[in-house]
Image (cartoon, rainbow, N blue to C red):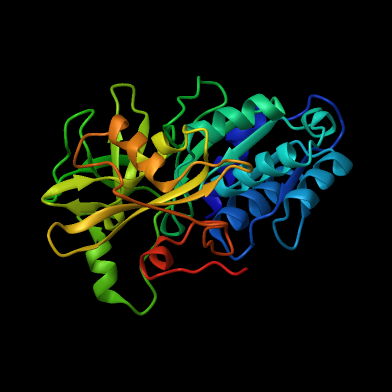
Amino acid sequence: MLSNAITTYHMLAPAMRATPAQDVELVTLPLFHSTAQTCQMNACLYGGVRFVMLPRFDAAAVLDTMAIEKVGFWIGVPTMYWALLEFAASRRTPVASVSEHLRVCVSGGAPMPVEVLTRFEATFGVRVLEGYGLSETSPVVSFNQLQKPSRPGTVGLPVFGVDVRCVDDEGRAVATGERGEIVVRGPNVMKGYYNRPEATEDAMRQGWFHTGDIGVIDADGYLSIVDRKKDMILRGGFNVYPRELEEVLMTHPAVSLVAVVGIPDARLGEEVKAFIVKRQGSAASEDEIVAWGREQFASYKYPRVVEFLPNLPMNASGKILKRELRSGFRPSV
């Protein structure tokens, strides 16, 4: 945790002010979460950065606080970025007072849809650096660095002292550009799961922590997250990765937010279903989205079932809870 906090601070330090004024970071994630605890609280204490805390994420409060406190840095999960964009658009909130001081934003916790990332950068005039990590890795594994060009759709390069590979089911490294489970080795990796020796033994194999995430490493070493291994849909013998579909569905003009899951199907084992929050004022129907998807994806991939919801279930850290969608989530009115 200490090495990760120090590494986080030094990765963002080049964006610090060259004036005596103290830098300010806004904390909207809960401090029981490793990202807020390590990358914000501990990194700020280590680097002498003032941090302002809000008790919970609220789009209006976040934008007001950013303007009043002259916030230069912020870390959020993708749904928080989406919420700020939706709030600013629906209320026609001027963002100049926010973007005047905001110098770097960081996204983690879940893959950031490229559509959301590019919209946020254009709206607020700030660079968004996407990274990847888990609680078991304290948490940062890889990060898009300030001094290097970002590659939207990737979570950057392994951070200092951390090794990353993508491996097959036998633990062998896959070729560059091929999909495999992401495994991690370094000082940031946990000792084990408390009082769960079998789970620890399963996760820690041959000195590598097995994340349960599917990824791809390109020729330059940039890591892309394909999906969670457990979220992969097996439809009639074909592997369908929800994140791939979500990225494309987010580009549809009627789609504001989307989550794709597998639902039981007697014939195929699983069928592909998309839960969608529509953009305000959109009149698109479920059938229209299905027809559009048929044109975008291979025949075995596109969602045959679409359901519109006013909101999606999220945990305290802003992650979409797909297990609730699979088990029949019904939004509160």
